[in-house]
Length: 260
Ligand code: 5GP
Image 1 (cartoon, rainbow, N blue to C red):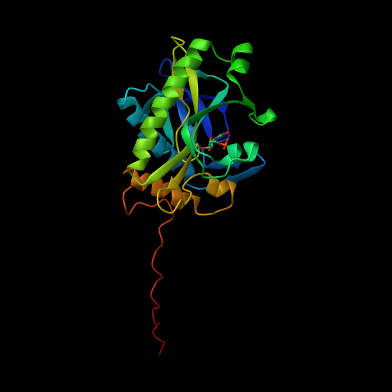
Image 2 (image 1 turned 90 degrees about the vertical axis):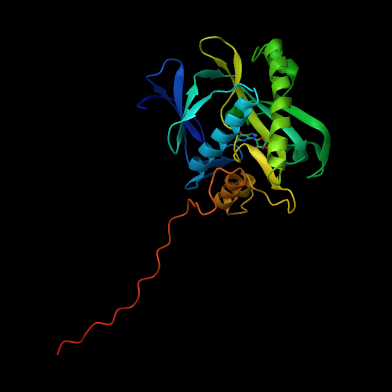
C-alpha cells in the first residue's frame, strides 16, 4: 500500500494519506513520551508490539460488535484505518485506582473501585490534558449529548470485554484511555486510535508486576520484555519470538599454523 502525504504526527503515531477513499495509514513509532512530553525516549521495537497488540484487541472488539477504525494491519508498523476526525477528548475508564486519580484525590493506589469510573480529559498538550466534566463537553460543543451517551455505553462494553480478555491471561486491567472519531463520510462516531500497553495499565494478576507504559514513566526498565509478555499471553507472539537482536555464539578460537 503506497503512503501519501503525512496528515498528522502525534507523540507515538503518524497518519498518512493513501489512495483508498476514506481510509488512511496509521504508523506506530518507537517514541515514548510521558508527563506531558517532559520525558522522552525511543524504545526500539515498541511500535511493532503496539501495532500487533492493538490490531489483536481491535479485531476482537469488532467481533464482539464494537465498531472501530481498524481495517487491517498492512505491515510490522502500519495499519489501514478508517479516516475519522478525532473528538478532542481522552476517555479514561478506571477499575482500580492508580496514576493521576491517586495523585489528584489522594485515593490509595490499588483501591478496587466498586464500579468502573469514566473520566473525560481535554486532548490539549499545552494545557496538560485537563480533566473536564460532561457539562464542559456540551458547553464548548466538543461532542453532542447523543454522542457522549453512545460513547459512555460503548466505554462500559469495551471495559467489560477487555477486563474479561485480560483476566483470561492472568492480567488485571487497571485503567485505559481511548479516543473516538467521527467518520468522514457519515459522521457516525466510532472507537479510534489504539489500545495497547501504551494506553492501558496492566498488572500481573498474582504479582501486580506492571506490564505497561508505567515501566517507562517510573523508570522501572524492561519495557519491551513486559510488552512482549502481554503479546505472548494474548497468543500473538510465539514463545520463541523476540524483538531483541539475535545473539550469535562467540566464534571459536582457531589455532593458526606457524610458518615453517
Ligand atoms: P492517568 O490519568 O492515570 O495518567 O492515566 C489513566 C490511563 O489512561 C492510563 O492507562 C494511561 O496510560 C492512559 N492515558 C491517559 N492519558 C494518556 C496519554 O496522553 N497518552 C497515553 N498513551 N495514555 C494515556
